[in-house]
Image 1 (spheres, helix red, strand yellow):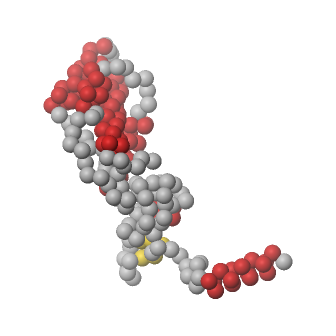
Image 2: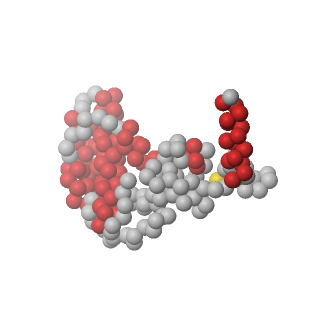
Image 3: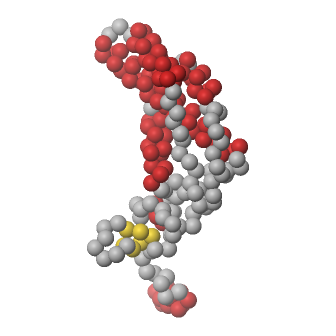
Length: 189
């Protein structure tokens, strides 16, 4: 009984739309290895980073065919995403340092960027590495090394401090990008 209802529903669906059950992921040309989405996705709030995005689920980047809003599934965002992943992986107690104060003061500095269009993705965080930032980072690393006597512990402590500094730099760049988007009326997810 259910099988008859199902086949009737499929038949009615195919009458309305003959391409209803055709695959949406195709190839550019015969022999081409790169796949593309023939219809594109219509994501509104996921940033195309969830499995209900057809492109993300198929492990392909969104393209010009897609009608998504606030897309993060594009090649330009991969570097920023990688940096944010590194920052999230470095979770440990973070002591307050001179670098934190410098980064907070630099977070809002810079020229405002142009408004992104509905299709354009938010710009990746810009990392402005000045001599002052390098000096502050080096001071933090040297101070951390001076606190530890053992060679093995010193290496570990320096690497942890460097991770903290890197995370703080990425954090400040993200705050700056978010602040600029909010100042210009850009939507944030």
